[in-house]
Length: 312
Ligand code: AKB
Image (cartoon, rainbow, N blue to C red; front, side, top):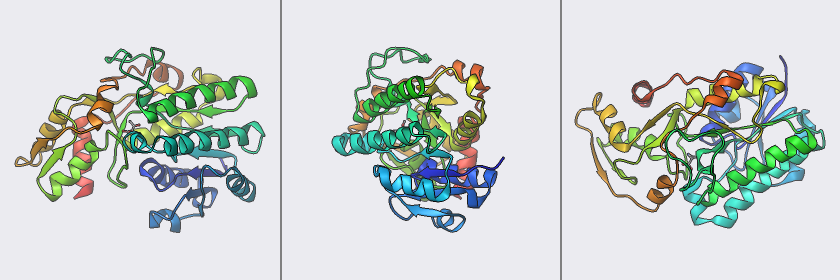
């Protein structure tokens, strides 16, 4: 099937791999990558690339019209740790970029949107274990507040204007192609880099902080799968819970030590500990399994093998 796609925030951790996957699926020339600044050279060289500010409605509209874009993936966002330092900038980027694409779809200039939400929509009063799809959501972080508001707006635009917006609540994502930036779950990527380069890592979370995580290949498969499903299958238009594995820093260390026995860890929790403490330990993703057949393939051991093999 031929379609024309725009990715906003294509040079970030998820955007990079999503761009490669979409170009493979739909053809390089049909997938326009964009970001606020130049980034990954392969992304800029392998297909159309535009410098684009996701908060600028007119600029996005120009690109949409020029390339006759049908689908937009909005991956530009400020993540949890950075957002705590720049609350207003985070709110401006995370919300205005979403309104821009929702309004483009409302005005029938595009026909479908993917927008990522996060486990950050949950807060300290949410049940921590097997967090259900529908539950108490009182996020205590700037990023979480923006994602929860975004979910409400997505559902509103779907119900009120028929905007076909689809979303998942990503857990922490582990990948080797591009480093994450500004998140609380970033430690689970940094730790592999440091294990190989220095044989030691100083972790900013305490050893028993359990968080939901996912290997990038699963996350990309989930995203493409959700976007491929017929609209009538999708019962949730806020955002779907998505799960793969849950682990603590101590557990990821043990998994790495199976390959690098001398690897050592020290713990120096900082302000990100409070963010991690407010998030679930594990997620119930049965609604996604039921509606569109979601199932994760990577557990911690398989993720560790892939990360070390590819980073080496
Ligand atoms: C973060 O740590 O901020 C992100 C997320 C869980 O959405 N990785």
